[in-house]
Length: 292
Image (cartoon, rainbow, N blue to C red; front, side):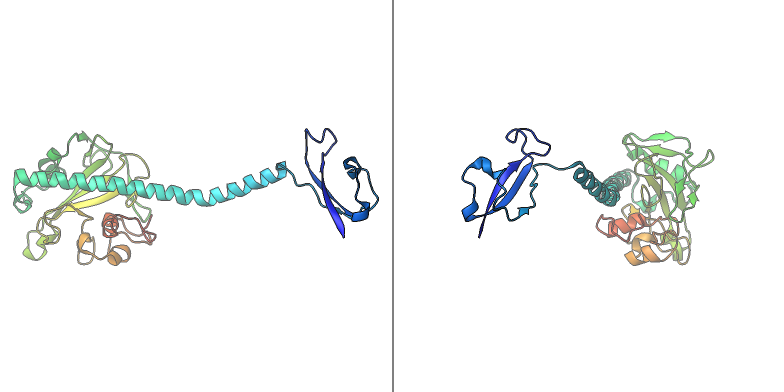
């Protein structure tokens, strides 16, 4: 049976007490165990094996570089997700504010101008004129800008030029930088389709900042005066631009993500007019199948 002894060693020499770099272990037979401590470094008799030592007190440069490399790889994999999650949360906060501001302006207008059904839907043919009369006076601090050169990008990669250019509708900027435009006024006189009458309002929740894309920072809201499910409040989306012209707010989540036109299709087709409706239906969340 042998007896194991651990001894301080210093790589490269020097004072062992001042610069200990590790341990060395030696195994001796009981009858050959050195009696003097200084013999532990010099006595060879009885040495059966020298075990691996070097229980270091620090890290080598190679170990540090490898660790940093691993951290870098992990960061590269996780940072895009963290950034996207942060952007989504910011979008929800700003979108909620836009929705609240519009609804408050709408309710205040009803107090002054009467029920929305009595507004002059038939004789005011221009969306901006209609908005200036019924909505703009109730948006505090709004500044009018004659025109915008910014083109909004649609989900399918094309650009919506409805609001860009000198001959287009002006836009209005709130003190927090949010901008909006009155870009659609549709009055349907016949009783069968009268519920499609609406004022369409486009909002850029962060103004001129990027990405200027539907479903990311550009969203659509509408006022439907004759649709029972959408009456009395500003609703997300507008109405489909093909088929039966269904109101986005009345479509199911699945319909908004997979069917119709100009809604919020997850395959990135269409303009994305119904994306605000998807977020609200999801309880003010941006879920994994949302076309982010």
